[in-house]
Amino acid sequence: MRGSTRIQPTPESARSMRPTAYYASRSQLGATLAPKLSRLKDDQNSDIAILALSEGGAVMAIEFARYLSAPIGLLLTADINLPDQDTRLGVINSSGHFTRDVAISKPHMEAFEMEYRNAIARAKSKALSELHRTGHKDRVKPDFFRNKIVILVHDVTQSGTIFQAGLDFLHSVHTDGAILISGVASYDAQ
Image (cartoon, rainbow, N blue to C red; front, side):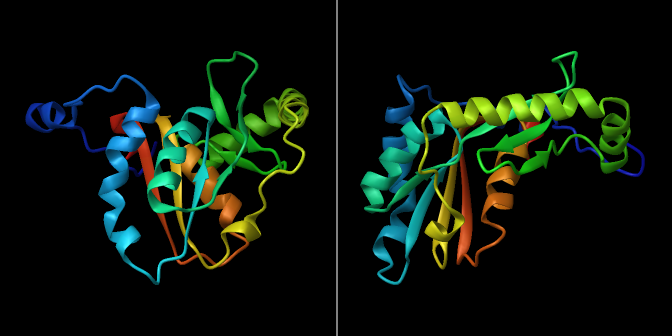
């Protein structure tokens, strides 16, 4: 990408980014991380809601919700790929909103959309149909999170795209802040 600088980890920082603990399950990981949110639990003025961004994230989020006595919602999403299935363009949520992958520049996305317009439209339509077929009829609405501190939870994050999709979903309502939590993140997810 022209004009951008990518910071590469030094051997020392790369070692410090390696996981120091492994967990038997996402539930165990969520239960272990939940006490790190104790400041929110102790603040009587904090109105908190949790938005899980994947099924695995929901398992972790349930532990946070239990610890914080907070309501939880699940935002269903599906990846949208180029026909080669190797290049992820972004994600679409169950409301039909598409979020571009953070690793793809806007000019590159525009070029892909020109070249693969019909294939992308078919992929979005198919993904939306599959999301609706899950039976999640009463999907979570952005208003559920109005005036709350929202904790967005994903289990394995390879880029910031899924979090951007969650923030895009919340864009139409005022929130009192957002906390992003991932059980595992690659260096590229910064």
